[in-house]
Length: 119
Image 1 (cartoon, helix red, strand yellow):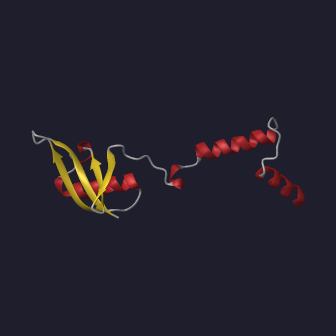
Image 2: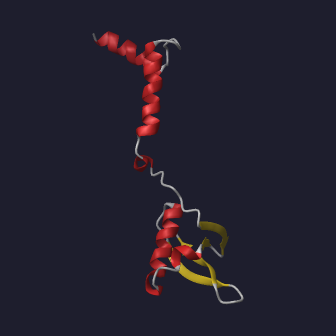
Image 3: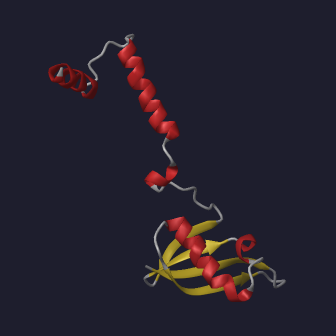
């Protein structure tokens, strides 16, 4: 009994079944089920916000461009915390927000925010 299990396990690991066999189909089904039914949280694979863009580093600080739609609705007092959350969501790592600068156009309309962070 145990020898049959070891042989079956060995054949499964080494993929030693004929292509048209039911064992092959079962293995392919298991692989597809794993791909499509595994929760994203298991691999920390979360969608990244495309409205937060990493720019080239500036004097050792990481720089991020944040679209105004993400921070304008937030009250002034909570903007830094929200910006830190957005950057953390983009990088997947906890960061310390050093500075948050609004960027204005010539008519004083906010075009975006520059977030300067340190790890």
